Image (cartoon, rainbow over all chains, first blue to last red; front, side, top):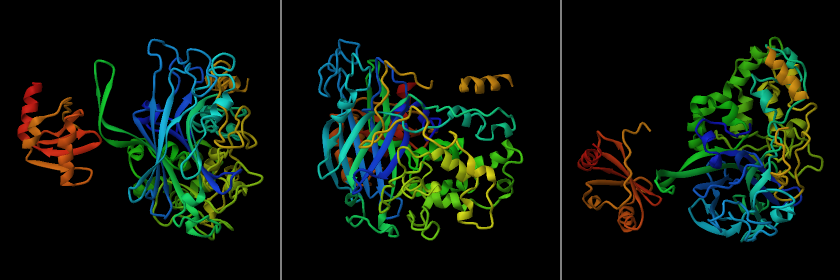
Length: 459
Length: 95
């Protein structure tokens, strides 16, 4: 998946497992940027009675580097607190939840958001902010869910908006196919173990996630405090990643209450999609999650010679001959994913953050939102899409698979001709958002979560 | 149906040595010969530890028996203490 269950240790800790990060210029408020960090992968909507929550014992953070040093100049911290209104009931809700402060909601969750600057000064932007409940059922428990969720969009001190709560999974991928020895369409029949052509199956269909979404004026993110207007300026580019941290020590007591102590220790991180999932090898995944972007040079060899690029010619004999013969370092992937795309490669675009190799989702905030977005982002000629940040609907699986298969090598090595197959790889044919995946046109952009009563996840 | 077809086709073919949690303040810390604040290397932080531990849980992690290194955690603070005597007494307590 994008980063769902991507490493051995974090796969056992879903509350702290970051699944996706999005960063884009808000299409309906282009003077702002929306940052979204998703957690809790593959929420089965009917999974009660203890429906999904953020972890009260997890420190969630969204980091922004705005001067190219791969260190956070701005960090938004999120701390959650959950209440049990009626400990004598086993129910998540003891009646209809018709408002966000309904006493019938037995497990309300609240949070604070704090902005921490590079010099360590912190400002509480909001506290005791309410999350919405999970979407239980439209008739009895959570009628008018959309209104409930909208009531959980809060204004921030100093400008901007915030939302934290359940959302429909917006990331789509044919999991069953890709992790079944890279069964790729449209040439499944050419696989070493061939199968007949079949349409893609969205493995995340019908599941929910928990999203932390924050929308802030661009002027609050740039290093000079000005609105970025020049796409060629380094000041226009930010690097974004999320982390989740837990206290260093946990003592399990016989009364069921844990005692936690010590500093927070990072257990999950995510910037660009699919990196720890597909690029980093199993033996390094847990260490990658605990490490900092500024130290990612240690992982650069995985980008220079990705395992998947070696596998494709083996799994598809004769389909990727040019890729098979290419033995140079994948400078294209190192640039796109570790340092950003420098000026002069793509007309009118750059999102370079300098020479420090670091996994960050890089967004050039001076590129305006596209009036006709292409889900293939820059590969599809849409400079407002991935890997210029990432919008909720971008088909990052197709983009990264094609890149790994070699379509981006000519950006840095004109002597290379990509194999014909590389530019047609797709999960869903033709590249499209699978049916059942929906988004909304305003903050927080991810769709209304699937309700437990009606849902049929992964049909 | 597509899913069934596809699936149907395929169907055919810490080097930690010891960890000791101490859920109470440990008065013997006052005699600790060496203490380092891991987070800040600030000597005043140690004083803060003494001030706070009596109201909070305190966790000691013996990360290296041979060196007598004990990691002390209280609140969000962390200190490394080197005290082989303390380690030996803790070891005795669990044997």
